[in-house]
Amino acid sequence: MAIIPLDIIDIIVDILSRDDPEELTSVKSLSLACRAFVPACRKRIFASVGLNNHFDEEECEPRHATTAMFYRRLCSTSEISQYVRNIDYSITTDDFTDTTIPLAFEKITRLQRLQFFYYPLDKKTKPKASWDKSSLRVAFCYLFQLASLTKLELFGISNFVLADLSHCVNLEKMRFSNLSTVSTPSPKGIQNTPIKLRSLGIGSNSGSMLSKLSVNLGEPEHIQATKNMVRLCNNLSKFEISVLDPSVDLGDLASLLQPSITTLKKLEFNLHFSGQEEDDPLFNLGEGLEHLGNLEGNTIENIEITVHISEYSDCDRGSRWQSLDRAFQRSKWPQIKHVSLVVMAVFAAQERGFFDDFNDVWWKHLVWLREDAPFSFVFELKNDMVDEL
Image: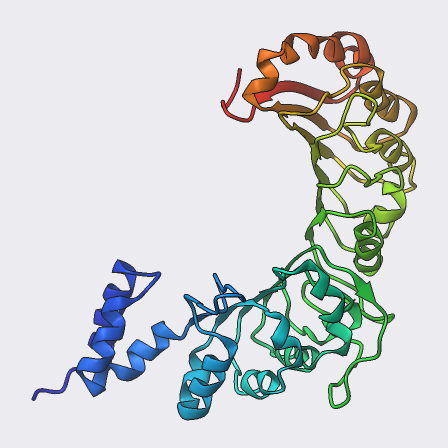
């Protein structure tokens, strides 16, 4: 049999992987057909690993590998660990006490992206599945230390220790949601040296070079967790906030963003309103912006506000919106160039005359922004089921 050059093998496997990027069925079959193709095939097959994805804890029927299966594979074929670049990990309740998981993750050396989340079927079990007291924490702290790790996403974690992020030496992008935090020392055997990260700094002597941050505020306590993160970020240029809970209050926005007030250029707000007429559809954003505009050194140039109004809410069309007018009229905003307000509603809202009534907001309650603002102001009414009215 003629010897096929390695670069030709790589081209063949690469073409097959592009034809079926999700399941890689052809690549898996090829790895069984010829031993010469095995290394190139494994490189694609194990580049992205999904653990417990689409996992039903009651029926125990995972479509992707479980953590136990992944551990057994690493033990039997240790060389595949060098191919793992991406991990999407849906944590099960049992994983928090599984001592084999740290042993499995310690074999991985070239991970680039890590996503992990925990959404138990039984919500009552969540307080018992705590980050700071689990063996999983040691496993993830090891992965955080990898110089190759540049992207991190974590969701639904209780009692997350922010200091653990200080091990992320080259992090470039981070996303988090539904995260509660505590202050706890790092695990034994894990170094905790103050370092300057490329994208995120944790520690009194480490400045952050993070330029963009997006957060979802699903509960009021998420604001404090975000403050703990942002207070160590002094180089943000863009900040995105999505509000999902009616009890979240944005009145203290100035305190939240003060650490990066001299570098911030753009703010984006996505406000999801599902309350009644007596509730504030802006989540007290007007007061927050008024205080923010008066902060010394404010460099913000662009603010985009999108309010998503649910079908069954009875949103105020009156004076609450005037708080935005006052926020910009009463504060300095020395470098502001553009402000936009987009109100999105579902089709059913339009049938109730929603959009006709909302014209009053434009003509009666945003007068200064419409007529006298020394910057560009855009106001739009849109429908979530149609691109634009």
